[in-house]
Amino acid sequence: MRTRKQGTAMSAESLFTPFTIKSLSLPNRIVMAPMTRSFSPGGIPTDDVAAYYRRRAEGGVGLIFTEGTAIERPAAKSNDAHPDFFGHGLTGWSKVFEAVHSAGGRIAPQLWHVGSVHPEEKDGNDPNEPIDSPSGIRAPEGAFGQPMTEEMIQDTIDAFAASARHAQKIGADAINIHAAHGYLIDQFFWALTNRRDDRWGGEDIGSRSRFAAEVIRAIRSAVGPDLPIIIRLSQWKQQDYTVRLATTPTEMHAWLEPMADAGIDMFDCSQRRFWEPEFEGSDLNFAGWVKKISGLPTITVGSVGLDAEFLSFFTDRKMAPAPVDELVRRLERGDFDLVAVGRALLGDPHWAEKIREGRASELLAFDRSVMRTLT
Image 1: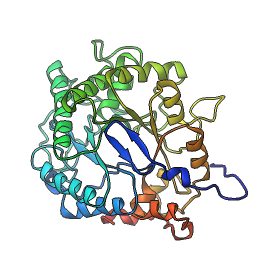
Image 2: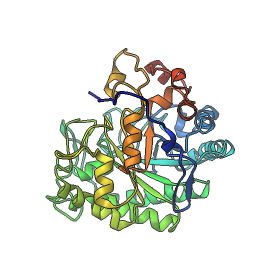
Image 3: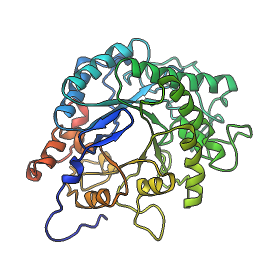
């Protein structure tokens, strides 16, 4: 249960201080978290998608992360309405970026490959396409397809780099790599799904970080030194919420070091409840520990602005607005640099503006019915 300080509410002013990293300058510390919406038929974002993102920019969000966008690999997504970041999908994303920029916003695509998190009957995809995964395993079921060959691995790395290059050409302000929540890159991290005995596997988390590091290197080569590259990580997996890739600070260092050496600029640290400590003996959360260990900027996320974590999404309960006092306390202490907001922003495009102006009484509760439209 989240604890809250008693007494006068803390000012949210620190959330609205500028932040700069490489070529990216933000007016505040609020980020729109990436959230899958499935409103891009044939992989092409529509004008409604552009308007949806524009509204968040108009509402005062400092940086927008798009929903997950598929790279050009067979079975990189599990639904035909998930957007592509290649081919015809780029036409739609060009309109989205233009809409966000015209509203004074900044935007970064989240590059995505679902790996073996894939239904057997793939909606809108060729059922005969191979499924990419490190070891031909889908957790928790077990064997699912064949392990990726060296050629498949290299082609996937190249596809991430190609999408990043496309993003830069159409005006992306940064790149976000999805390496969390049990998707493809995370499957390389996770010992349960990566049982390879070659250079892409290994007994320790540092060895299993090689694939992520090579994706980062390829993207850096594609976009040059100035465009920020951000990677989203998580301990938990959608297949198992109790999983922890790094059970100690030492293991976390081994996990992060290859990515830091490869040139990552920032870690986007996903946890279900931002206020929960990562290791015993400290109240630092996931983002706090990642920043302490890596020395790099971090983003925190996890039930920001709501009174219940995301599993409540699968019930009929409405989630009420929650104070940001504890979030601000940790930000001001220097635990992390940016704050990603998910469901609260999904249901209320003006969440950031209301927080800035002290209009807490106007914040909207989150009702999952908003998922049926692009609010």
